[in-house]
Length: 258
Image (cartoon, rainbow, N blue to C red; front, side, top):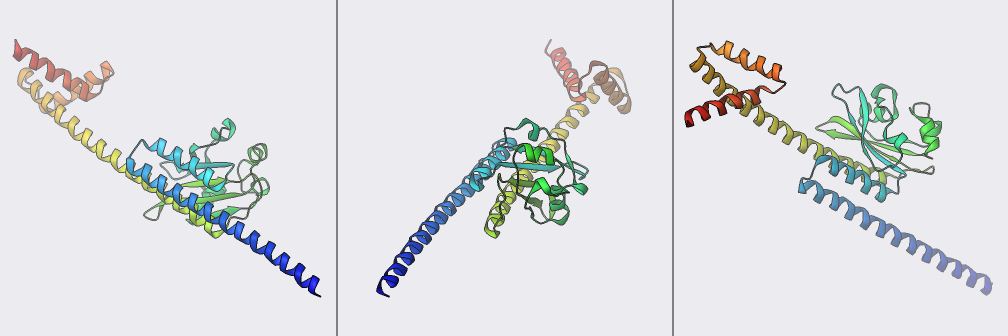
């Protein structure tokens, strides 16, 4: 009886040691994940080029999740197809695979339903678009997280494993946090691009207006005729209207300087 109790206590000690090791491993993993998210936030705040940001996001996510492949797909302008924007995969076949339809793909389902989608085994899922590539690259389980901007989907973040894996709620929440950061980076960059485009359009309009004034003064043309002349010159010379207008302004300045 004493021997049996002693053996049972030894077994309990082993279980406690194993549990402590598991908790320590989880704690280390959690610390690494938090550190990774912090690094992502810092990178986005630094404002480097968007493609480099997204490339770093998929690479760090793959490392953090132990993913075989992590990819970020964006919706096209019409919202019909999803195309791979960046991935850490070295597989040319995966990187260059054609866009997938939102209406007929697993990734598209996450966009339509606006929620995470988990596929236990892509090789046997009838909705998965490229099962041959999945088998060739040894892709099994898939987690798809929609990237949202103000309740509007703009793309998805995909995480593949090399073995069948049951994604936990914690893992899903973690990748969702990453997807949210990616969406913020994209929204921020698009806002900057839009502002720069508006600024460029305003500058172009000012230059063309000034060039039109020169033509109206020196050639007696109407405003419409001056605009059409600049437009025609731009087409004939394969230049932008701004470039033609700037050339006219420079020519007048040179004439004044004589």
